[in-house]
Length: 204
Image (cartoon, rainbow, N blue to C red; front, side, top):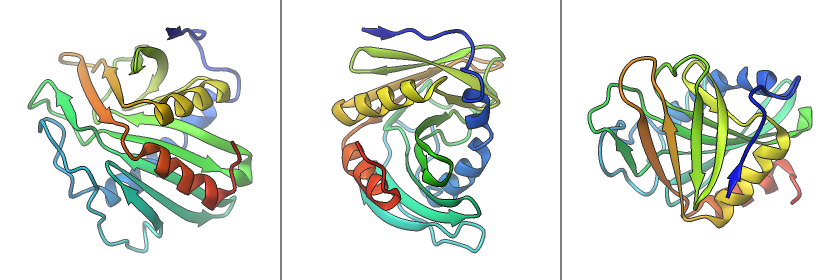
């Protein structure tokens, strides 16, 4: 089954979501720095959490398998998110930063289930990132080195698929070089989602 979406983000949604990418990535990379860079065929099942600095005052809610959950406060209110890295990335030895998958809740802004994938390299302008979860496929719009769903409804559908699924495959097209494929194990994803749902009072 394939979830087809329009070629442009819904007004006010996709573009709005993209502004959160750098902030989220700053937290995620800081908290996952000890995981080997993409290009390694295997990475630890549990992220090794680096010590928080004043620049990343996030509270760890828990770490389950390949996923870790966090919360922090900012002016608009509490923010809860989970982050994980792939078990396998191809091609081996590709020049890129660590890829990261994230889901973020911002209840103070009435935003929940924002899915994002940071590919770790500049994506080809105008390209989509392909997400395959157990045969269900989604096309994500791109900006810079990151990809997002185009609508809140699609975000929710992706989270539901990841909660039920066993693995997610993410394919991105760099500005230069071959297409990359990252394979994420979804073991522990449902538990991590439950942690950020509870912390940010998101109902399902």
